[in-house]
Length: 262
Image (cartoon, rainbow, N blue to C red; front, side, top):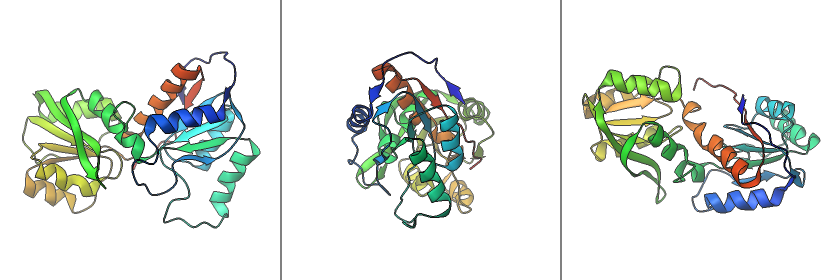
């Protein structure tokens, strides 16, 4: 876990923080797979924020250790395909939140797409892309970003920059032009959007995950495909929200890292 230095500020009303984030991220502007914004209501005042990728028992236990009373996750709970029966792990998650008065917020696609705090905009910045534009349409909204690498990067140079940005060794099907001049980025599990990168004539496409058919799809299209990790591509947005709340409200925050190789 990493954090900014804590500051001794007055407590902040929970509802002020929720309203601020909902307006900042335009909650409801993009159809999603479950509720966004406030998922579980906790204490009326916030003293410390924890941010993370996926709500889980492990994340909540670490947030409790950090004495956080507001948790912001990228992924949500109560998703469309999940059971609404409160038992097992879901019951334990909710018990942890209720017993410790923790508020849980989730911002998924609206955070992916955000021009300042979004995963994709931040990845484009980390990769030093030029002429960045929205890319990757989902239900009428372009979630991702695309741009130019200037100067172009050889496959080896691109690999080094990817390792510096995400850590680990991303899976790369390097069938595209060498050097790489253009790339599209959609964080997470956007395997099915690879075709959009092909159709737009990009040299490379970066997302978090991969499926078996992608290797031959990349080879036949002559486009490089990068799977940098679903988890690793989606830590940027929540960290940025933690920084923003620190600036706006003086709230100390912590990134709760629950590493995931996927």
